[in-house]
Image 1 (spheres, rainbow, N blue to C red):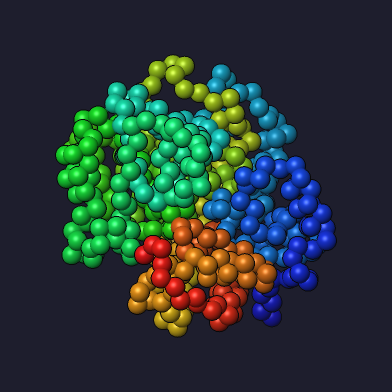
Image 2 (tube, rainbow, N blue to C red):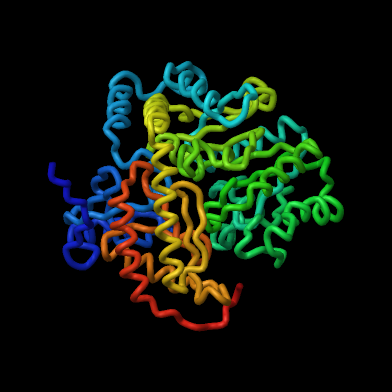
Amino acid sequence: MAKSKRREPIIQGALPGPKSKAIIDQDENFVSPSYTRDFPVVAQKGEGCWIIDPDGNEFLDFSSGIAVTSAGHCHPEVVQAIQQQAAQLIHMSGTDFYYPTQSDLARKLAEIAPGDSPKRVFYCNSGAESIEGAIKLARYHTKRQRIIAFFGAFHGRTYGAMSLTASKVVQRRYFAPFLPGVHHVPYGYCYRCPLNLEYPECNVECVDYIEEMLFKRNVPAEEVAAVIVEPIQGEGGYVVPPVEYHQRLKALCEKHGILYVADEVQSGFGRTGKMFACEHFGIEPDIMCLAKGIASGMPLGAIVAKADVMDWEYGSHASTYGGNPVACAASLAVIRLLESGLVENSARMGQYLSERLLKLKRKYPIIGDVRGKGLMVGVEIVQDQETEYKAPTERNFIVDEMVKRGVILIGCGDNVLRFAPPLIVSKDEIDVCLEVFEEVLKQVKVERRHPSYI
């Protein structure tokens, strides 16, 4: 049997094409300017790992709609689940009525969540809403007020979630005052240790910082309701801490009766080669926040908490659209796909992607670090590997040049590229992406400059 020809990006002239430009022009007249529209790409159709625009250009999507389309764009089984449910019931309000799909999904989420403790589920519409609910639940359960979050964290843009977020100042500028009682501490970012130490000799002192500096000098531990943390930081730069980092952080929480809340919005649902990133660290969260890949494109979020933690009373928290039956049906289809091979494919293809990127690191000094789990892989772009000075201008150049060649790759942090394709990605598609990536790396001219930050 003849080998099938691999699919390549198709770019017909300068971007955007005429049809796409007309849509972009209209968008700029009527849509809020707050959106970060950095790409001249109009997504009209999605197929697996591919996006097609109105002009017939075909892009290889290594962003997954910002880590959302876990099963790929328009997976037939997800589409079928959506269509069948939409033909039966679209909405009746899960706050006041029961849905079969909502109940079935809650049971499934409780089954697949890390750890053996009984779980309960609250539904919402997004990651930010999941975080908002987790803040409320943590305060309600502990009767404490304070929250600890991390520098580099991104938890969403609503007020409570934004108060925890400390990724980019533009996300907070002019929006103060924020939620009171939120305290930020350094994250376990070993490549750029905030304490200027070296792992493993450091003995993960960034966790000791919370005890020795925060609790002794500023924040009474007995007033802290929760530590809210991304197992792997997403927007902050796809930062993977050492295994013992989260283990010691969880132990610190248990010592002081603080809830450990895992933000798995970006890292969950097979993205890291396990169902949830917490599993890489052997952690059972007290509360887990979910969204993005949960329904491969349908708007759905959830809080999964230990049953004895989710003890808020009747009427204390609810959501009109949360747990929409169509979104829940999509999520059940996604989980079936994850359990039937997509999690394993994420681990296998993630290893292949990381190994190839490490080979490029040895060849191109502009690549300072390659890190990640599964198909959540970050590449840190630097001026050179010796100084490790950040190179945000060069990172942005790479993103722009890749989309011109038909590969969608987005940034995170100040100078990191995130490789986050749909979990259905193949070796051929990874090869296509990295061949384009190397073409662009050859064109990057590093501007030597003293950094404003190191």
